[in-house]
Amino acid sequence: METFVFSSRAKITTLSLMGVGFLCLLISFFVDGGEGHHMRFWTNFLHNSVFFVGIAAIAGFALAAFTTAYAGWFVQFKRVWESFGTFLLPGLFLMGVLIVGLFTHGHHLYHWNDEAAVATDAILEHKSSFLNKYWYTFGTIGFMGLWYFMIGKMRNISIAEDKDDRDTKFTYYKNYKFWAAAFLPIFGFTSAALIWQWVMSIDSHWYSTMFAWYASASLFVAMTALTIMLLIYLKSRGYFPGVNQEHFHDLGKYLFAISIFWTYVWFSQFMLIWYANVGEETIYFRERMDNYPVLFWSNLGLNFLLPFLILMRNDTKRKMGTLFFASALVFFGHWLDFFSMIKPGARLTLIELTEHEGAHGEEGDHAEMGAHGEEELGHDQQAEGHDGDETAALAHGEVVSEGDNLEATAGTQNDVRDNGNVHFDASEQNEGVPVANDFAGGSPSTSGDGIDVLASAANRTDADVFEPNHYIQEENVDDTEMLGHLEVAGGHSEATHTLGFKSGYTLPGLLEIGTFLGFLGGFLFFVLSKLSTARIEPKHDPYLEESLHHHT
Image (cartoon, rainbow, N blue to C red):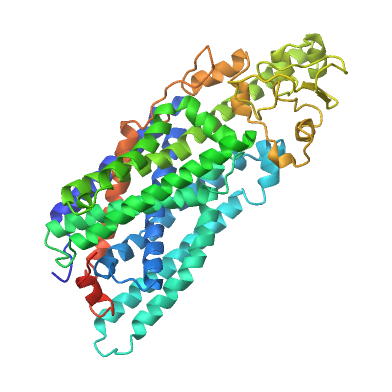
């Protein structure tokens, strides 16, 4: 069959999935209303929007890369990837909703969008030239719009090629290849910037130079898995008769190989951060390993161990049932991967917001007390009156961890660094305490000169390297107020003050699964609609014959 017919049954199925997803998304807006800011709703919306927009974009990248490399094996089903790429148009609308939320403060996904927090945070202020709502808006609309234009241009050239029987000089193909080659460097640079904005900046104090590679590899595997499942479905309906075991074998090899590459990037990022042991980097993995161990290790199991064991044999890449099963596992696994990138950081932002709101309330209480003439103590007086008291140190603005050795006098027998505000003993090492940096004896104070003091404590000058992780620090002090904030975020353990289980954050709940299915239904509805508007296989592509007679 030359043209795909979007059957009523397929339309009803995809529209039903969309309905389920919309209902689950709507429920998630209200079900956690008590926690404030509707964080569960917004994280679900961001998670699925980025995931499916990323699949659309990476399909365009694959199309451009294979075309530029003079590959021919994929030509028969290249319309599938072209249709994937056109989902960037509804994707622009989805990301536009998030942009509106930035300007109206309808959501609080990003800590850097809080002007008051940026003004008092040296790290966020330093990054504010990039992490701001204007850059976010320009990058999202500008870059995504450019991707959509270029992929759409390639698709239009491909469709026009089908209608021209007189082209003997491969004019359309050369033009197609020109746009493909131009798309590669543009996408390579702009996609990294957007994934930093959309996902990495949720953990706004953390960064990794490998994050864009990591996220792109995850999206490529998810896109390949979805391609395999969709092609198996279309073949079962009589389409793509020329797509055979050899093509699925090649797709299976990409699924296997890029899963290994994803694991390589995962391990490299983790190992380098673990080995360097720099506080602003380790906080990302420490948070996920301590509070989300099931999510953390199941991510590695689903996306490396299972595809490795299943797809290592050649024959499993040629068996449709096994290949479909492996693809479904991996597709869900990389959706879970993005869940783990987004949810923990957003949950910490929620804790921070709750803390700030509580602090503002306390300031109002103190002001009222002062108005009635009751006794007030300044922060400095409180600190002097509670020497060695961690709670008082917190009130003074210091970052304190268990095992800190804060001396009252200078000149000890140990290696003590005097920063003007705190004497830091580097002779002792307290293991098992997640502090901003694994300084021996605990973290230095951030009072007084703030971040400069923290930098000078380790004889370093780059303040951006030494950021205090407020969330992790506060979880490890005996502060009853902070424990109350942890209760709002899902409970805590009295022994370690780690976050407790919370559906939709610790692990996906039914609302998250339903929302995922809804976005998947919407993606497939749009893709299949586009697939029905042109020949399902290209007619005059110069590599069509190679694709038809392809063998491994």
